[in-house]
Length: 456
Image 1: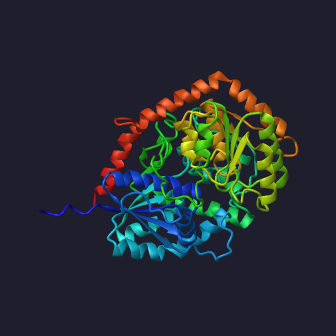
Image 2: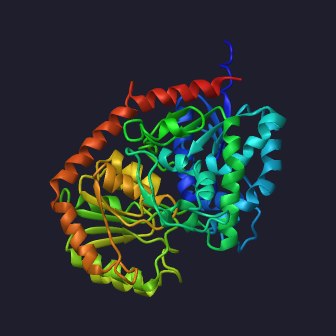
Image 3: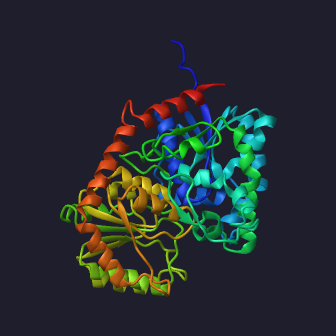
């Protein structure tokens, strides 16, 4: 009997941050389901974190997802939350190893995070083909392409600093933000880091045409105006989802599944779910106001508090005392299986930083939002949620920049009284589910991607 032909092998290359690794791991599972083999690249630092979070469990996929890793150019104590600085060192640290792996393993295709588009340098030298993957919205991608014009128009300078504040909206069907909220202004931790980020954008924008396609974790119904603005034809394959039965294998922290039986014990539509992603940091005052606001709201809540959620670390003593205070009313976990939480019937709303993954997951499960953006593209996503889709409310800080406990209590009550927001969230959920179902637009684009990756 003839042996079955080998699976086509694809390299998947995320930027080394949780919000980038997860959607690309979810995409990897889809590719494996369609008969491809994946070489999934992490940095050494994140590879170790993922293995520790898995705690001996294997990556689902029947061995068709191979985890490999390379250095990130930072020392053991480097600040990997400084996105600009991390971005600056990656090409020199990784390109050699990537090239050697592509050659030795006869890889014909790389699915590369847009933030890792330096891999396009290998297109002419190694002959590899590249599909770029956007971990942010198509609208944010389109905004990125406008950076040279924003510099020319005097809105920002070449260091990424704002020179003139104005409202920016590329199309009436796309989100609007103030120049103060542009993603690159809030991402850099220092002027040097911000400058490096803007220079990377300016350098890489013209290279995108070397890619074969841009793959987006979105769906056409919500980004019909933004997708045509991308520099090459795009495939909208979202919202992506993790495998239902087990962890996808891309988490930097172990998921605390104790929250699932706790949710089972709560009344339908009663729980306030609070999670701020992997990079948001609160100072002690903001942390205390949030804690007090959740208590004041008078509803059961599930709050994700990462070990590094507070600027100086979340003290175990403070956390233990708060857990005692809210016993029976609220649950605090270190990291949650978010998609399973959002799909739970007891969840009423999502207090979120509005990262794009969280935005897509909330939409996919029909959960209304209370928006509390921190940095990067999150302000743009908030505009989608509140202004264009009408499925959430903004949480507003006071004149000191603090979100008070009274604001939290008031907004939770107002959101959960608003039947129109709830109806719109459920309608958008229906559209997203139809898109990923067999025959839907996102499902068709996924099949186009699979067929493309099968080509030599």
